[in-house]
View (cartoon, rainbow, N blue to C red):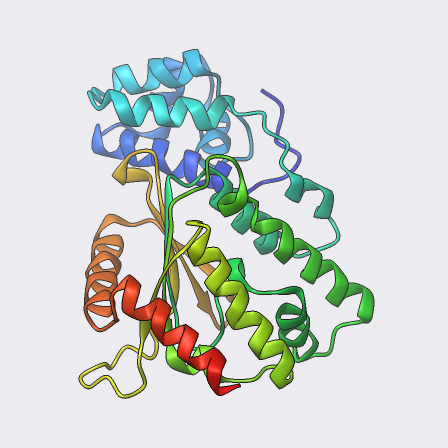
Length: 283
């Protein structure tokens, strides 16, 4: 297959998983290439995601790697053969690739779980809230760049607003709900919007009150994206150099533990809804 025009995080993950299977089988890239009647360079391109791999070739590799996890194999085949051109592609060349990769990952996720401490979750932000966040970015963005980012953020909500929404649970710190990134009116509209999404069954929201004792997870913000099989789970965390995708199983297990600990510090769904409702009365 010819090189992919754009290397996406999803394609890179497919290649990385094939490399893991090869290494687990104790084969070199050169040995694996012979199975496809290819050379080591082509194998390297497949494992880096820069060229595609057909379903037939992928299954041949899996068989020779003695991989018996049929669910994993079929999930990888689904990625390899997916030709979806999602709404995010219209932003190609206009926004940094992390915006597109994130939207694609959300689109394909089996479920979404999130921890946010400082801002309202992106999937639940109103346009006014998002605009205020992006306007505050340094270095400053142009009005056109802000408008692009806001529009992209609003379109991301498709995953929870479509006919069969992706299950989405977010744990939000009270600080994020109280801080006024814009004005009082925008904050009130934002809180009411979150309540609307809860009422519509499009988001499960749990709040961590500021007064909660024993919570030391101020740096816990992350988005956890469930894969079609656990081996394809992914976590997305902000890093100094940009967003970081995490897919190593030991790290994912640590993050699952973190999710459980943070959830234990939060109010249940009903109490969280009542909490947000009380905040609207204070504005």
